[in-house]
Length: 92
Image 1: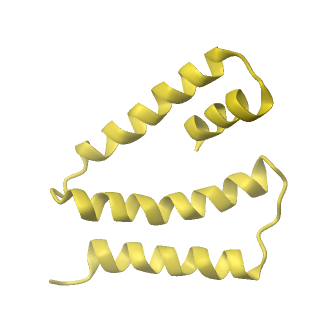
Image 2: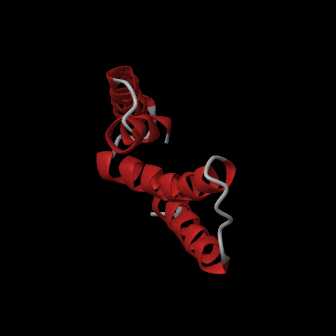
């Protein structure tokens, strides 16, 4: 979340290029960290991260931007997390 936010601040709010560089480093790490997960399937890992990203985005907006999620945001986040659990833990 932080990496994208730093890029946003650089592009949309006119912050220093250092915000962009730090954002880029964080986003690169975001791409590397999933490779350390025990699950070996790229698609499953990134699908799970996508669901978690949705929920974290809502929490970020609530905590940082002070935008309270409405009931549809909460329902959508719950659906995303159900999807994560189905993808990662449903017996095959």
